[in-house]
Length: 209
Image (spheres, rainbow, N blue to C red):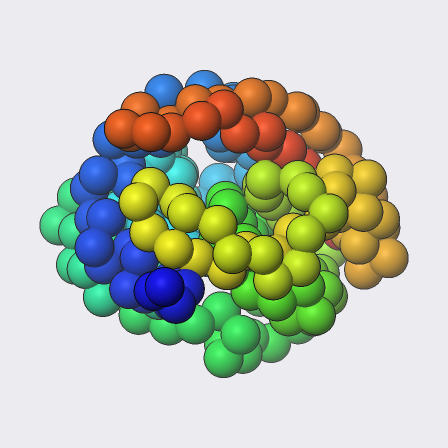
């Protein structure tokens, strides 16, 4: 049996197929639209797991914000740089990034922690809270499930996934000192052969001023 692939291996292989499969995720666009309404002009936004740059970085940069995206997959960074030249994209593992406290007006994390162990996810949520400016917002999305290190197949690739229930994710955000201001649960079927419906949860949390 083939072992689980790393996130870099999976998303280097998927490339724009991932963007195509998730292009109709209206709940993600709704979360971004809501964020845009709350941001100050020329906000500094950190997009972790930026993928192809669409739709997140493209929508935010198109609205005049200063977007920096990171992804672990070199192919994704290459695609994003070509597709969204108004934003900046760098290769990097979010767990290795360091920023001063209060560096960002907003941080977006769409489904990019599912291949991290639960302990790393908890650590990262704490860092997100530190990195936000007072009044800043974290937009976080995941596939809610009570799983830790479960081997699954995602778009034809074997991966090891970890996640939390929607209630547990909300608890982690609050424990990090953030106030949840928006929550949406959705069901989505990726446009990909063999894809099955998957639950999504979108949470927007604000750092108190």
